[in-house]
Amino acid sequence: MAPGRWPTVKWVLLEAALVVVIGALFAFAANQVSPRGLALTRNYFPAGTGRLVPATPLATLPHNATSTNSMAVTPAQLLAAELKEKGLQLVDGSQAVRFFHDPRFRQDIVVFVDARDEQHYREGHIPGAYEFDPYRPEKYFSAVLPVCKAAEQIVVYCNGGDCDDSETAAILLRDVGIVNQKLLVYGGGITEWTTNGLPVEMGGRNSGDLRNSSK
Amino acid sequence: MKTSRTSRSRTAADISAVLARWLLGAVFLYMGLSKALHPVDFLKLVRQYDLVQSSLLLNSIAAALPWFEIFCGLLLLAGVAVRGAALTLMLMLVPFTVLVFHRALAIRAALDIPFCAVKFDCGCGTGVVFICRKLLENFLLIMLSGWLLAGYGRQFSLRFDLIKSHPRQGETEEILVSSPDDRD
Image (cartoon, rainbow over all chains, first blue to last red; front, side, top):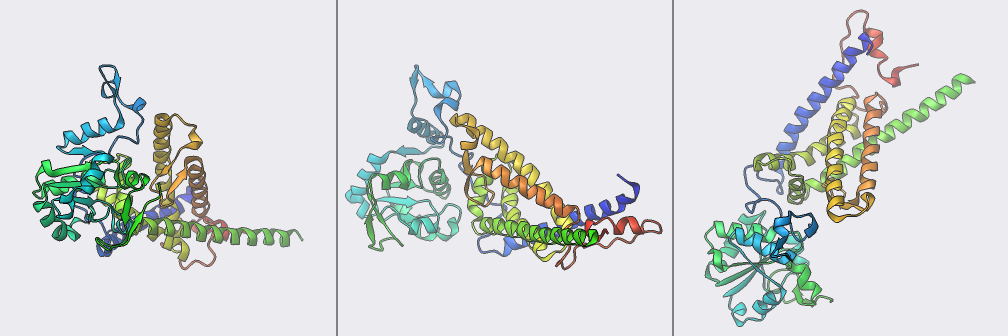
């Protein structure tokens, strides 16, 4: 570098440092002011690390995790084991349908909890499911908590696949006093539900706008 | 004749540089806004990279980064502290590109598919994209940042140099010609 060029480089570096400092102050202030801003001290993922299955093929998992008695373990079994470690139970599609048709569902003894955000909930949820975005829990606790406390079984779901928001929601509910044994995670989620051609409700809960999802 | 041609090519270069500055600014403004409007989605995407264990640090990154990109985008659009902003963006883009590349390699290995067939939401603000396209985009953004860092794109800027240097005797000319736009 030519000796005379150093002052220019120095000023550019200083300018970049100023951009970083002022930018960071602006960024944190904007986050604070924004109604959608994140709470910096909250643990948004009480369930720990993200779900490994079924997004990850079995071939990539450690050998001891994929084979027991030389039999292949399905992604659903792995997910069930993962949930069990967290004290949660997995329900599959047929069990979810049984709960949906259970007469106790109409009496809020069995409840469905949708752990997706408001937009996705309004675009179609399991009819009668309660909205509970685990990343904005304060907004929903007042409506969901009394129902969950009174219910005997709570089926929590999100998109299915590698979405672990249902686990996050279930753990949040457990942390505020809902008994662990009541909490069931529907692993297939809304994706499996709609793929099976089951009805979805548009808009708010009990809006009456029911639609059959195409198989 | 020769002077006229040089002058025309310089004008074309000046206009291109200003357009590059506006393009880079608009891209960062768009990408920042798309993340700032859905901070939780961005938080989940940042978590995929397993960069930090502390939730405070993870939240801070996801909360600040979108707004920081908006800030830098606005600086470039307005033409304020252009070289400082360009250097900052370059220093952000290079490690981001490395991270995205590493994640793509992991996905390629897991799914056993060709590298360019890997597509995922890298948290860049553009949704699910094919990795090769993303890498090319980032390379172009880095190049544009480098161009601005070299001092181009001075026209239509409010305050290209935020800090005006105060040259000592003898340094004056070197500092003043440091910007390519000031040459000739």
